[in-house]
Length: 377
Image 1 (cartoon, helix red, strand yellow):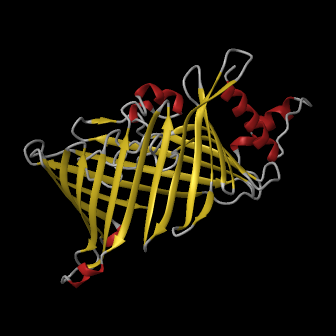
Image 2 (image 1 turned 90 degrees about the vertical axis):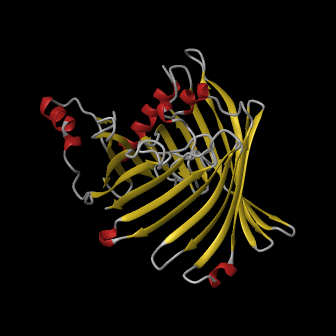
Image 3 (image 1 turned 120 degrees about the horizontal axis):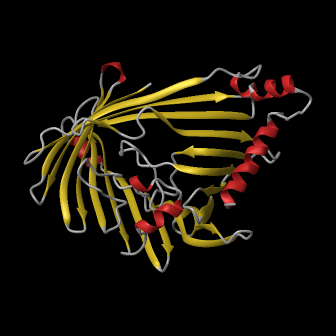
């Protein structure tokens, strides 16, 4: 039997025991009552909360397709069973208007979790099910919201303060495990540096045995120096490494330009060895292989797979408010020699509808406009 099956079964038993559910063989009527108990809300349960979001996007390519529309709608159902146990369900529907087809997840429940707080009396929380999940800043595993169908992970998570442990379902032979924790250290002349180290590995083995192996070590880093803040991440696995660094600096001088206020300059760079993360790794990392594993868009626009693509990437952007109620950003993005200028601007319109518009001017002549309109409810 696979390791994760045993772990899932054990966790399910713990969660159910927290609710006081017990099987009994005292008779058919008793058995039927218990069988149907899960179909009704327990006495004293809190009300269910419903939330969601919907958006529509279009890309207009100057020298090509003038219409590329896709849409997405999601619903979230959160229910407190009692003061310790909660259940969450998420359903998604998406479509590509050009192809006329609805995605395989259309109208289906694609996320579902059960969480039990303080189950062992230690203040920690167990969560089991399928959900969006990002490790670190998403270099290895990430749920990319820019994708209309973000990747999901199935497994068990245990969170207790600054410590996090998880087991994820993988392929037929191996599952994966990981842990992270928060740590701070004071560096002379640089102030406090916050770190979030992580380990990611496989759980496998022959029948009757269990084998743990470590695939990746890494850490998120953040701090401040010389009056500005910075953040970054470093990871290594299989003899290959990847890292990123970013900072944001206030540019008060731009505020003197009529109509411009609140300006800042952001800089980022990212690089990875060619063999850092291959497609063969995806199945054992507990992610939806069709959607990839890492975040790819990050700070770029519609046309650019930017900061977390598996190649050398650098960005330099200026964020500002071009007029009242609007936020804007002008950025130069260089992706392994494939460079472009990217402008985007956003505002909130009547009814709480958020609107984004952008223009991507590629050095290779591939220019495009894009627009996104969405609302949370």
